Every structure is written in structure tokens, then in C-alpha cells.
Length: 515
Image (cartoon, rainbow, N blue to C red):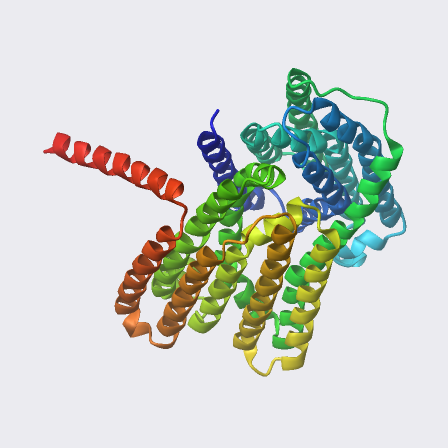
């Protein structure tokens, strides 16, 4: 499978997984609520949310090892086998440690607060909820401790799309199995058993496929290099702390909003931010499939291919996403009123602030991918800690005086600072490796961000000018796009012109056929 097809297949799998997530989180809500009490469903949501955070250190460990694998030259099965063999024992041990800590907290009663106070739930339901949390977490540990590493190996071998489609299967089974159990009249504990069993079954099939793939590429298990494994595990704790800072920035901010502005403002904040959160997942569907190939270009010091990857990411994440967000800003008041049935007031300025912060995040994604893929762990931790601390301190300094608008301003300011720092660190790393940061492309991409940000801000302040502002933004975006393309190397421009020519010819052929 060629590069373009691998990226397209991986992106399609990622979009399918997002669709399944939306279906499970939104479409199945009526099913649960029609068969369960509100307390049961609330406990189930807590179980699903908590299991996503239990293995945060294991996730960091897998990502660090996976990034090391991407730095191994293609065809070096022995090198990949050495990394895999060194990581597997630590992966199993770390997952077990996370599980034992969770069980200890449950035995001490410390997890009861997750399900509200103990007296708020019947003792039987509380015990059922805690047992369900432990069971599902155990199933995830058994299923992911090995397949998580082998999945990263598949990406290093050029099979990201294969792993992504298996991820779709895991997502589908993990969503449909508990829903089927509920439909058949199961309570909380039997539903957790259905989820755990389904998760283990599909991960067993996934692992078997990954084993065959590894053997086909000459990757075999060896005697573990305990020193190498320990160094990777120790380094991954820094990435785990970075993830924790990110969680503090996301979840902690929601708590701060509720504490400073009240529950109603917290609901409005979360609802207004929904579009940005969904767009974040969309950004991942673009960057994740490209990531293994991008790291291979950097490993082999391929300047032209590296520039081409930057161009592709910015074309998608900035030149396509930016105008789409401007259009959404113009349509948002109507869509928001329909979606919330008029129960929440739409704040155009806050919505624009969230979208501008998203664009700043998007333009920094290629630079962030470099830091992530090269395991610049101290830099990542410093940036994550700065972002979390600056966000929390900024919100506390405002003390609710500027409402949600002030919080949106803090998010934009912090995202701007993080973008600048991330780009500077990534550019410095490229320079140290004899590669050049694509400054000309970046300037056009940044200009596009500023144009779209100005368009959204103007629409927020002058809602009646929505159509005119969208038109002006599109015209300026077209000019910036033309300038962006002219900065591409001649080979990339020729390839792009050839693709556009084929697409145009195909459209013209369809039009003639229709006539």
C-alpha cells in the first residue's frame, strides 16, 4: 500500500472511530435511560470515564517506546525486537501496579467520591459500581499491556492503518456489547462483565494478528534488555506527567468555571466548547495517520519529504479548517439554538475565542509532533506544566470578573504562548539535525490563522455582517493559499498541479456525462 493510501485509510479509520464514539456517547443514551435508573447510568458513566485515566502511565510508556521504534531504520527487525522485548515486562508490571493502586483505593473507600458520597447511593449499587470499575480496568490491562506495544510496532512497520481499523473494531465491540446486555435487561455488574469479556475477546484477535505481522517482518522476542526497558519506563514518567497536566488544564478548568461563575456557567462553558472538542478529534484524524511517515522522514533526514508533510498538515489543519470555523461562527447562533432547544444562551464572543484557540493549537501540531516523536520529554513536560499553570493562574486572577469571555481570552493567550514556544523548540531541533524549519510556509499559515481569527471576531461583534465577512475571509484565504503553494518546492507544486488536473478532468467528464 502506497503512502497516500496508507494515510487515507488511517484517516478514514479514525473518522469512523469518532463516529462510533458519537454514537455511543449520544445515540445510546436513550437506551440506557429507558432500562436503568439515573443512578445506575451515572455510575456507568463514571466507570467508563475513570478507566480512561487509570492507565495514563501505561499509555505514556507505550508512546515513548513507540516513538523509539519509529527511529529504528526500516527493515531492522532485530532492533525493533530488542525494543519490544525490553518494554513488554515493564508494560505488564506497570499495568499491574496501576491496577493494584486502584484496588487499594477502592478497599480504603477513596473511590466512593467518584460515584458521589456513599450515603447518596444504596450500598449494593455502590459495591456493584466499584466492582465494575475494577473488572473493566482489569480487562483493559490484560488486553492493552501487550497489544498497545504491538500496535506501536505495527505503525513502525508501516501498518498504522491496520492498527487503526482494529481500533475501530475494539470501539464497536466495546460500545455494542454493553448496550446489548442492557437491552436484554442486565444491570450494572452483568453489563460490566459483557464489556470486559468483549474487550478481551477482540483484543485477543487483535494481538494474534499483530503477532503474525511481527513475525512476517522478522521481529521476534529476545531476552529482555532490562536496562533499556528501565530507561524507557523512567523517561515515560515525564510524558505521563505531561498528560496529567493536560488533564488538569481540561478537567480542572471546568471545575474552576463552576466554582467561580456557578453551575450554569459551567454548563454553558462545556456546551459552547463542544464544537472545539469535536474539532480536536478531527485534527487527530489528520495528524495520527501521517505521524509514522513523518517520523520516518525525520529519521532519514529527508528535507523535501519533511517540507511536504508540513505543507500537507497546514493545508488541512489551517487552510481548510480555518474557513470552516469562520462559516461555523456565522451559522452557530442558529445551530446552537436548535441544538440546545433554546435552553442556553449563545455567547458569540466566547465561541469565537474557543475556535481561535483551536486554530492556534492546529498550526502548532506539526511542531508538537516533532517534539513527541523525538521523545523530547523534558520539553513536553515543561510546555504542558506551563500551559496548565498559566491557564489556572489566569482564570484565578480574573476571579470571574470578565465571565466566560475572560476565560476564553485566557485560553487564547495561553495557546498563543504555547504555540510560539513549541514552534521555537521544534525549529531548534530541526536545525540541530541539519534540517530547516519551513519558515515561508509557516508565515503564510500564520497569516491564514490571523485572517480567520479576525473574521470570527468580527462576526461575533457584528452578527449582521456574517455573509460579507465569510466572503471576504474566503477571498483572502484564496490569496494566502496561492502564496502558500508558491512556497512549495517545484516537485511538490508539480505533483499538486497534476492531482488537481486529474480531479478537474474527472469532474468535467462527469458533467459532460450528465448533459
